[in-house]
Length: 266
Image (tube, rainbow, N blue to C red; front, side):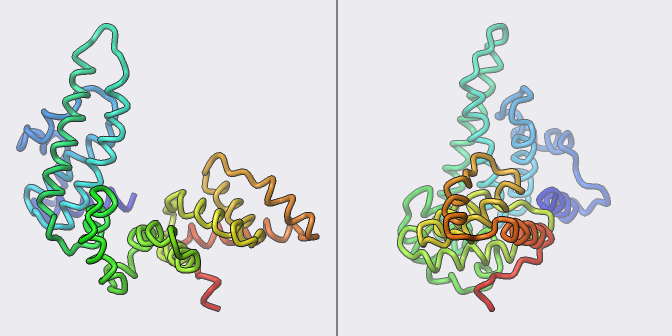
């Protein structure tokens, strides 16, 4: 919802209109932003997001707008790549249209990476490193990891956690907690925040913590969270699961209300 609102606000700013542009209006004004994507109903939401963000980046080609477009093209690419493998017996044109969309997404992501090779935008720096193995981008990102643009962004805290998890468990936990602290009200965090916390706590025999975040993950709708082994560890040590269930519920409510505070700060 916040994402949609920001897109609409951006369009209002660009157009100076009281009403935001519709998808149909964008396609009419800039048909090339629509014609080279798939024409059927597959990946409808991802396609719509890409079209709107293409228009925004076209009108105002800032690094931030390029970053948002890059993320949306990546999501569209992931969706349309799967759809392109689906055989449509009667309408071969549908598959061709999806392949066209897939090729467009690859071409546009390549353009955006080339356009932002010298960026200082933290999100783009992370993408340049994580997708293209650009070590210079990683060096620049680590140099600004204490800047507000990074420390006050849940997304960037999670990105840094995905880097540090390879060699610094304690810092990773701090970054994941910070990610949850910065989580906006009613927003469900990236599932990997929870699975990473569960894995790290289990690794260090912090079974109470692992159990709590396993239950929080389940409450968030994340599937395939197996708590049986953790439960057995706790029961064997005489721990009460009921009290931990209460803590898990409280933690989940705090995260979803945007009120979570890292227990490490006490």
